[in-house]
Amino acid sequence: MKVEDNTPARQYVVGANSNIIISDCGSIYLDNDEQVTFRGQDGHEYDVTKKNWGYYATPSINDRLKKFKLSTVLTKNRKGQVYIMLVHEEKRDLFDEYCETEGLKVLDWPSEIEV
Image 1: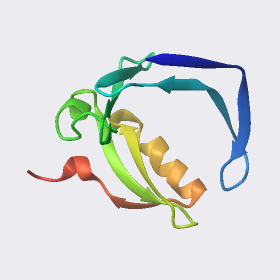
Image 2: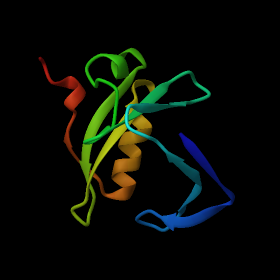
Image 3: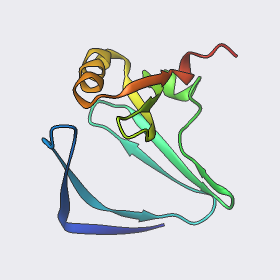
Image 4: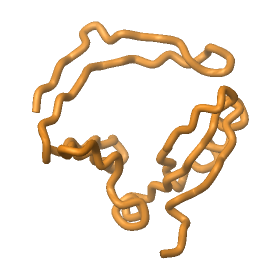
């Protein structure tokens, strides 16, 4: 694994009202079968694993993510671009507000699919 720090962070503006500033803090380069875990101050975790065919973009959405109280949601923006998002269960109201403000349409909640 190689970590490349962006100091200072590259910043750019996004959002339906151009009122969100994203800071690109760096890059992580993984070899096949390497994983990186992102950890929030709130104790939630999110893993990405590099494979020779691509990536596991999330841990299992119906097991590990649920244990971390994260729900997987598929959304589409006003331009028709589709995104996979992870929503903290206790912050669903903030997510709903975000979707309203940004004009996002929820397509599905895959983590709620019965298997």
